[in-house]
Image (cartoon, rainbow, N blue to C red; front, side, top):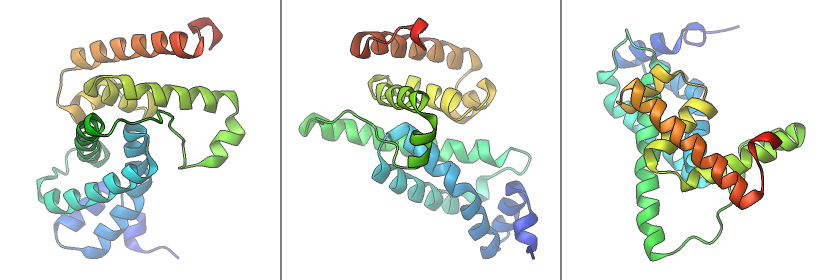
Length: 194
């Protein structure tokens, strides 16, 4: 037996939560938590930081829910919040690393270990790519994660980041070129090998 909130879209839940329905907000959090964690993890490549970023994103969601426009896709609007929180954490991390250099540059996908087992070489390659995104400038990192790992459209990425579609395409081009270059120099993986 399903309740009314379980049948509502996330947009409908957001509108209900705006009106003060705590049950709708709880359901909204339950539905969007996996997506928020996944995006934060892909941007931060750290399980603990991703959990904290997802939690902080929901706090910001609660604080700014009155700003949500129901004519917008909720996921796109919320992606912007999660991305901003994760990018803030990346900037803070870079400041910390200036004082305490990071020695381990490997990203381990602790979110879903079964993915690694079932996907084999593709999962290993995806892990390498996630690791290499650490070396990208902030905007390129956000663009490639949203576009290539989260499967957002170019237009959605532009909306989430508040930049033009042309800027998304330019940053995506440079990010992909940089990752290809790093794959070859660090791992000996060429475009033809993939």
